[in-house]
Image 1: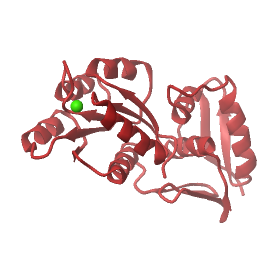
Image 2 (image 1 turned 30 degrees about the horizontal axis):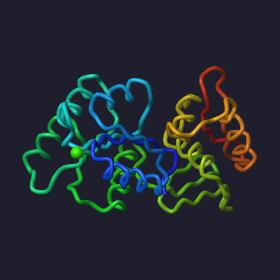
Image 3 (image 1 turned 90 degrees about the horizontal axis):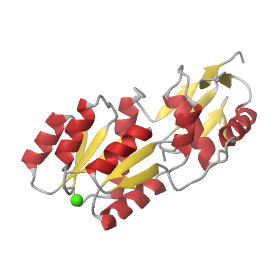
Image 4 (image 1 turned 90 degrees about the vertical axis):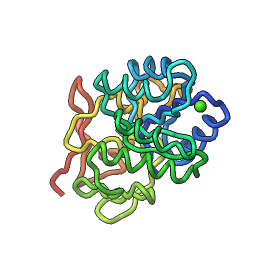
Length: 226
Ligand code: CA
């Protein structure tokens, strides 16, 4: 399972949206849902998402125009589109407008989750589901983590944070981004939640890898002397 990745679903059919939402949530994604292209653009202006799933058949402004607009706005996040069966021209058009992948309805939720994982890995240049930093090794697909060969148990939110840091290894990850990685809109975090999770994680990580606080900017996962 992949934790710590935030997905926005743009789908006007509430039943389909609910199914996707619970399917992706069960795979560990933090999932938010909007029902129109306009609501999606507002959400994208205010929040960070790691991936957007867009149904092409939307009311008012359709999925094509949304893909086009968000690329024109300079957004680079991966876009996965959902299309009707036998709509080859639609798929070609959406890919040409800037979508990264597509799924034909009806689809199986495990495939959607796997495609989401693959797109996010590609976008963060993590080439496989196995990530490491110093003595820390994480298998995202099997949801296993170990430090110096000894496995460690992590809570859902600890997973979310460690995966977000690993997918951006060598970079400073803002507290805001971590907050968004662990919670969807309907979850409320206390102001110091991230600090609490980071300090628990530090205790679990032990030697060989460290979460450094970069004052005023965020956190960075680093290899340390063993
Ligand atoms: Ca629709």
